[in-house]
Amino acid sequence: MSKAQFEKAVEIIGNLPKEGKIKPTTDDQLYFYKYFKQANVGDNTTSRPGMMDFAGKAKWDAWTSVKGVSKEEAYKKYVDKLLEILKNVDDEESRNYIKQIEEAA
Image (tube, rainbow, N blue to C red):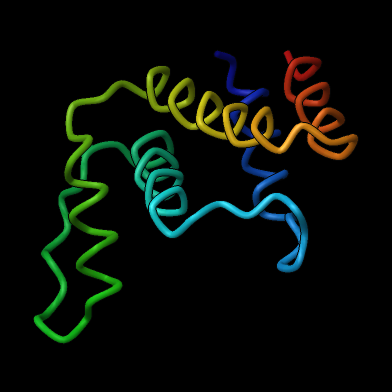
């Protein structure tokens, strides 16, 4: 998986309309978050958020769960997950996104 494909996938996810057909679940969003952070920052070395920061702790735990994953593997996991979601929707918009990712090389 190339960095260009990863960057295209990040762009697509960032621009998905809130009310569109393509709706990543909360679990999907955490999946994207952890692999985005791993690809761009590397292993999590930050302190775990406080007890009342539930969203922060969920993100921290997710990111920490992929400790040791290489940048290239993080790219692949991120892009593969988006392609899986797009293939399940299987409409013109999702097929267009798939084509954009495949052409980004």
